[in-house]
Length: 129
Image (cartoon, rainbow, N blue to C red; front, side, top):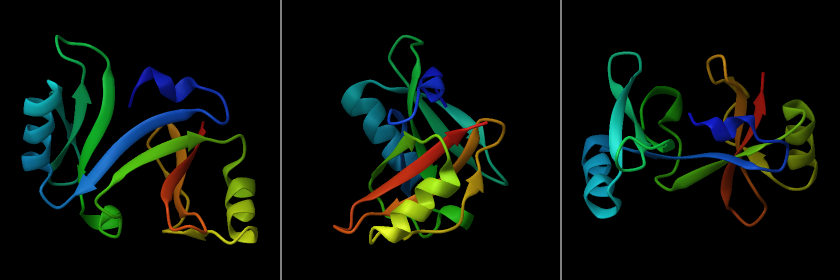
């Protein structure tokens, strides 16, 4: 993930796309917007970090809809930094939202939880470590 993960609460810190055909979609965005890609090793397959042309910063991820990500819809998912992920999840549920899975670790970067708001839109809450 990018340097933006150091942003404060309320900031959009990351965006990724989880799809069945990650290689095809990776190549699509590479051709359409010029993103370059780097493999991100997972358990038995690769997801992809997408970077600005010419070796620029990593700006997004394109991921396989496998394992714990199999239930995610094929749409761009933004990660929003929160100060306290447990409290934000409680507030989500108290205000008519849903969680799409549990709070999960994002390696050493932090923890996240995918939510659906009362209108049906999906986002991820992210707390840095």
